[in-house]
Amino acid sequence: MPVDLYLRTGPFIVHVETACAEVVDGISLLYDPSCVLNRPAFCDYHVAVVQPLWRRWFRPQALFLFDGYAPYLPGPKRHALPMLEWGMNWVIATTAHQFLIIHAAVVERHGLALLLPAPPGSGKSTLCAGLAFRGWRLLSDELALLVPQTGRVVPLARPISLKNESIDVISRFASEAVMGPRTEGSIKGTIALLRPPRASALGWDVPAMPRWIVFPQYEAGAALRMTQRSKAGTLVELGNNAMNYNIHGAVGFDALANLIDCCEVGDFVYSDLSAAVEFFTAIADGALRGDSMLTLASAGP
Amino acid sequence: MALLLRLTKRPIRERRWGDETVVFDTYSGETHHLTSLASAMFRRVAAVQPVEFDAICAEFVGVENGAIEPEEIGRAAARLCSTGLLWMEESEA
Image (cartoon, rainbow over all chains, first blue to last red; front, side):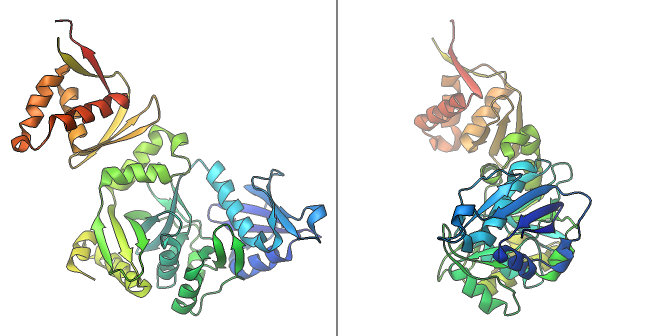
């Protein structure tokens, strides 16, 4: 029998209908109880993870639906939970145009947000998870929701999608972290979803002001380094990384330009997660004294 | 006969950081990143137009003891024209 679950994820309430035990158990494990609502009066989105009738027993499959529409082909049933997360990202990215949506992780400390835009495989989620388990508040692992009118980023704290080697890295880094089952053989390799810290889940309605935009890159054995980045080039890069920049037009351009005006921007290379987390924490603490990121970076880690 | 550079009559939005400029073309919805030379040329044409291409070449080649090659200036002008921000035409004189 299908189960109806109602998830509050940032500014959205999502109705999830599913009979997949993987999804029900996964939500129970990976979402804070405060995010699971009891039949709210209104839902922003109605999604479902269903099993096609003819593939329930033979090589079982799961299919993600949004208002009855399937944006993806069905996948193995063991991928049902990541499929739900990817599907919810797709739904938000293609419909929530009240926000300028940038493909970036966002974390916050002292009310100041650090945006980490980067392509897959750059170590963005690993760094984001590391920071979230060392006193930073997770706003999002995947989608930065920027309000064009205020310049603030609205939280969308959902499970962090860790891939391949980063799963073990975070398991060692934060032994208290709650992680879902490993899903092997996905298009992105092995995936495990990480439950956000409780403080991040409880801060679902507290936006943050962006202060830093950093493009991280993990390089095995590399010394930690931060280099200044062209602000003009960053605007173009963020526009390319944004899901709906083309829809916002001039408003989107102004929003990105204002974002860049109020942020320091840099390229960051790291190999040691602990050192990277300490580095960013020092930058956030230094910001309270008026220190700039690039000044601290030039002084050395 | 001389080549003249003019701004196209497009509504644009412009932001500048240092010597670089980003221009948003509200007609096409495209965003253009102008590096320092293209940015300087764009601003030069915007200040007083039309400008003879030869005059711009002479002016820019003279900058920093000729560090800028005329070919670079030509490429920058071609890029500005291909983005639709500038227009090049032959003078009638």
